[in-house]
Length: 411
Length: 220
Ligand SMILES: Nc1ncnc2c1ncn2[C@@H]1O[C@H](COP(=O)(O)OP(=O)(O)O)[C@@H](O)[C@H]1O
Ligand SMILES: [Mg+2]
Image 1 (cartoon, rainbow over the protein chains, first blue to last red):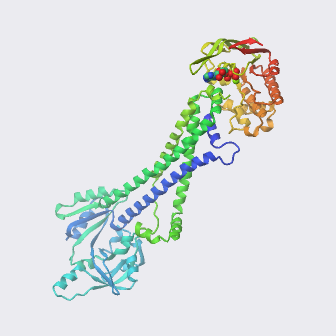
Image 2 (image 1 turned 90 degrees about the horizontal axis):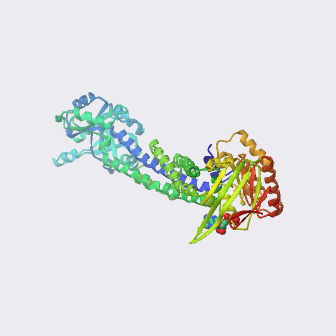
Image 3 (image 1 turned 180 degrees about the vertical axis):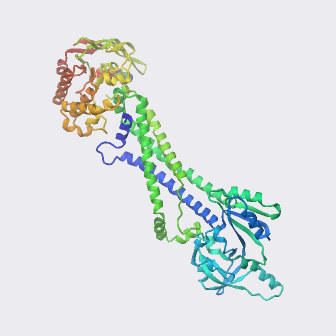
């Protein structure tokens, strides 16, 4: 090992001293910055990841929607099936209905789904908490968990549905008879809004309730793994004749504004928290500068022993790098450890402040999501190590400029 | 014995303090032969340290020439091999123990091997600190620190040792012991020695006694 690296190590971790205080403080500063960056970008990434997953898991990766109603549902699906990259399709119709259970009203968004095909496109089955998706028929309904809770409805409960069509009938002085459906399932996606305001029925029920005949509103599409949703959406649009009056959009395009804000938020947090590392780098600089001043004579002696100024500079630069590397490592450990126990920590915190409700309502999630992207971690590590090494430059330059004669003139 | 290790001719050094010129060295001539020991005495402020720094090649003279074993340039790395320096204030590196301090002189010149480690241990034994090899300088007394510094100066088997008041920070008895050690080791290894000292008794023990007075070296 070159002497300047050896000496840098010794100055940070002196022989025989158990706890190098100077080093520990500097390392801690960098570690805290890195930990904060890792935690916040991971949690931000987790929100984004969860939201993306939820969008894809409920809408499919590509959605084809008509400008109005799509009359020829079978024809559209047959055409979609010929587009390369399309793996499966499932039709849907949707609309708001009035729902009543034991005198309690609600106005959920109703999705009519094709029970036989929906599973090929979105993993609905996975979100069913009680009952079974297979039990869904034209006389039954699956409702979301929060809605079930607020209505007090259970599996087997009978709910009444009022559709806008009934209002039309009312205007014509026809008898107003709500449709009665039996609850056969309760689902929970983990997203506050979906879980409190969505109900599922068969496509046929929906078509009847809204008087659509055989028409649908759109088709959800599953694409082959590893394919880009935007690419497939473009391909589909190329394959659809203008007469179809339908357009395919990837989930990314459909949620463009939202995803943009998500990314922007993440970038802002990254940018702001990087300043923590810069601030801790300043403390590394000042402690190394103090060390250069304290060691003026030793540095002079090294010169007298034959050390070259660049080597002296390298010694201090390397100390910055080492503090950065050790601090980054400790920060990664601290950050990833905190993320690992995040739910326990959040639970403890919310119990202390009795704020769990707020958390769920505000963030739409009952558990704190986290998704650590390797790219983010790489960027954090690189930033932190580079910044800490830069922090060593000024002290290094000061040390290299010291002339042995001047450094040694002490009397 | 007659090979010239160090030659100085007409060496001058002037400092400017404010607008006052201070001529510290006004034409110093000096010859040191291999294995020879020379003492330099002089009042405080007479320029002894300044001269020694020039002799070490750490600073350049305003006028005059210097030659080390016939060469006019020590070269930074060559200096570490050719010269050993002992200062009044020891200058041990506080983070290193005695053995590591001695080895540092070699480390700066390149990688160290088992032979270097053995030499460091032998030198520490010679200066009577075999038992203290693992001690930090803060755990050593002044005399012991200076003995470590002597061992460090000898580490690279230099041809010449320059010692600037090596006993200045030590009590009389400890100082005597260090001088005995320094002279003994230099004689044993045929290393030339220039010893700057205030102590007449110490000066008497060298082969030649010089005095720095009014910027020139005279026989004392
Ligand atoms: N860099 C410098 N600038 C100005 N004056 C100096 C400098 N170095 C030494 N001197 C002066 O030169 C004189 C000789 O100093 P020095 O060689 O340290 O004396 P000694 O070692 O004999 O006590 C002193 O008066 C000192 O103040
Ligand atoms: Mg002096």
